[in-house]
Every structure is written in C-alpha cells, then in structure tokens.
Image (tube, rainbow, N blue to C red):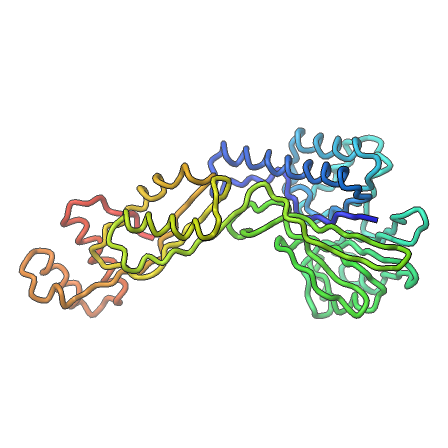
Length: 370
C-alpha cells in the first residue's frame, strides 16, 4: 500500500511580503498547480491514500477557485482516499459548502477518529484536531491495537516535555509506546523524520512549496510504502515544489566597485545551482573599503531578469584606513579626521558617517541606510 503524507500547503497565501501583487497572485496559482500535480502523481504511481495533515488553506477567506480545485481533485479521483485533518490556519467550514461529501474524503474532529485504510483492516489511520478542551488529554485517550499498522495524524509543534495545555504543541514523550508505527505531523514547514520509539517514527513532510525566505531549500511530500503482511513501513521524501527559494551569502571583502560585487554574486549563485525559476535573497557580507563604489539598486536591476525574484540585503561592514587619510590635505581628509576624532561615536557609526560623507563629496547618489 502507498500513502502520500503532505501538510502545510497553505493555499491562498497572500505572499505579498516580498512579491508584487502580480507575482503574489502568480505564486498563489502555482501553489494550487503543485497541489493538483501531487494528486496526479498519486494517481499515476498507484497511491492509495493522501494524508493532509493540516493547514491545507492559509486564511479564513478561501477563494472560489481554490476551493473548487481542491474539491474536484478529490472527487475526480475516487480510487484515492483523502484523510483531511484541519490545522490552525484552516477554515472551520470549508467542507460545509460541498453539500454531500464524497465517500473518499475522510475527516477528523476534536475526538479521536480511526479509519481502516485497507480492505483487511490491517492498517488504521487515526487522528484528532486539537483545541483548548482536548489538548491536555488527547495523548492519554489514544488507544491503538498493537496487532495493526497504526498511522496517527496530528497538527502541532513537537516537544519532548509533557503536554501543558497548549493546543499547538504535541508531546512526543506522551505518545511513545502507544503502538504508533508512523506519526504523520503538520505545522513545521521543514522536512524532518526521526524515531519516535523502538516501534515507530514521526515525520513532518514540510510545506509543499516554499513561500518566503524562512522556507528555503527543497520542499515536497513524503511517500509511504507499507507491507501490511510483513508489517513493514518505508518512508521517502519526494522533492516536488515547482520553485525553490535560496538565501545566498556573498562575501564581498576586497570588492572595489559595483561591477566587482555583481561578478561575485553571479559566481556564488552559479555554485548554488540557482536558475531562472529560483527566488533568491542575496545577503552581502564581509568588509569593503569605505570608498568602495556600491549601488544596490543597480545590482538588483542587473540580476532581476536572471531569476524569478531577487532581493539584496546588505550586511557588509565598512573598513576605514585612517592612516591613508592622516596627511590628506583635501576636504575629504579633513572630514575623515573630524569624524575619527569624535569619541562619542562607535567605530561602525564612524565608518557609516564617513561612507555617506565621501559619497556626498564625490557627488554620488546616497544609498538608503540599512
């Protein structure tokens, strides 16, 4: 038997923190496309069930297009069972608009619900949606048959301490030795698979698509293959996102100009295998001389057509060679010595003031302060 475990799809996310309204709309559509591609993958690879472990949607307001797309994806694949457990971002009444629910859609509630996943009832999928009332007791009320293969679905943040009544935390300690073979979790947006106890494992598949630069790296779902006769289970992460996000750190120490920095960025990005489909945040690091010519707007404009989206964050520091200005009789030299002699300023503050002062004296357009 094959089962897909996915979570945190977050359909209808706004995604306007970095992207323009047009690109945010495009990315929302791409999330929907990736979700439907996953269902097609399931159909093509003989997958029997899909576990949706919370946060299928992102907001209380669900667009008609997204709702209809999910509904049709489920209804058009009656050979696949869908186990949908709501997360903290899901709207309570999403399925209410369907009228009669298709028989292949299995829902959970605030009480433990268990479904037979195979014809012989050798594999069972159990889950509970956490709220203020059950969050302190749900672990203790879980009862599983040791002779079956048991998959348990929950949505929340793992902790190894006892439950303290927080509906978004899941105590692994209290779930150990409960006859769990696979604990299918949602809420954490990065893939993680670890042993739960001597019998079972727990897993976060991560989000299906990265949406912001706190979700860099590969994203996708987990494919389970279960031999109910031998009671063996294997799990494999399947990268599936249409786009990948990168945070690229570029050391610009020694660069003397914008052209030097541009060349360094391209070199580092090429080494990370970034391509035109990527969303990239470039973080400039290192130390540059105070009179280094550096135009961030020009850098972003030069690179914007090479990637789907790019932003640059400048965390480099300025280095001032005060000795070089000690005997300089120009206005620039006098300015540098004046700032250097101000004991009320920290060294980095001095270098920043000197940087902008030299820019102004040279007639350059001043960069925005970070």
